[in-house]
Length: 219
Length: 220
Image (cartoon, each protein chain N blue to C red):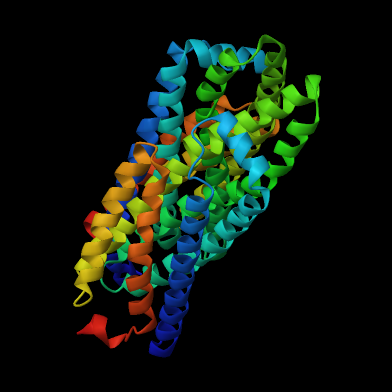
């Protein structure tokens, strides 16, 4: 196992940094949510927010994409480190996380397209604007009420599985228990249609990221 | 990985990159014949109505090209692992991310002519709804998603080329990839989609050298 870790030392280091950056992005998002006027409540509200907070929304979506890419790049290292305790579950967790994060990237890109769409609505004939609101309403229902809660639940499930395997792999208790608890909270919240609790997974990202850096250092 | 499997994987990846190169060359020809990328909604609707079959072919071709690229990048990542495990994996994953979120757009492009036909033949609220939908897809596919795809895949080409430069041979491919990757990354970040067409210059030599790949080269 130690020989295997030594071979992957550089990947573990990069992944550790990637996960810490992802955690940092989440904390920035938490801070941004404090500045922003909360999540949209309807399609019309979504277009209104896009018009009044364009730069903020674009910055948030870019942060989401950077965070998703950092975590996706780090998944092979997690599988390598955790597969000494249990081979199947880290792979299953990584697949769940990959699906969730790819869906999240697509959602972020869809939201990034909204400022241009809102500007096009302003330029469209008044009689056609209702149709733009209908499209925005569909996107609001799809992204905020269906897809993102699903992503939160799936990512939560992946983090729970990583946390359980981390306990078996004899990683520090904080890494495993924070994964199990924060993942379970995200899973339940996602199933209940809430998306905010996913931000607390940042704590686990940073904890496991630091752990990967330590393993790389001592290998 | 056993040597014969590495050779087979390299050959499959090489042929996949060659298919992607031919596909992109074909797409470039179709794009030129239809007057290039649409610059606004009205131009897009006109193109959709005027060149419906060509646009459907473009949508399908992109699907084939991207699946070929998927095979090619997985093969290249695996072949380059003995040179540098970390960066070949990071480059490979970035390519897979860029291709994964671009695949659904091929289906959107394939279906858009139907929406344009509906827009042309309807009136009132239905026409407004068609216009709003086409506008959203235009903003998503042409203004946001495809430039992001170009930037992410170009970054992957850049990273994998840096790994190629650390291998004992094929340095010319590394330098080509470095220039193409940097060009695509900047082009994509600035929203300039045709930057992806420069990938053809990288696909052919990379594909050809993967087809001729000898696993012992990396060990020398």
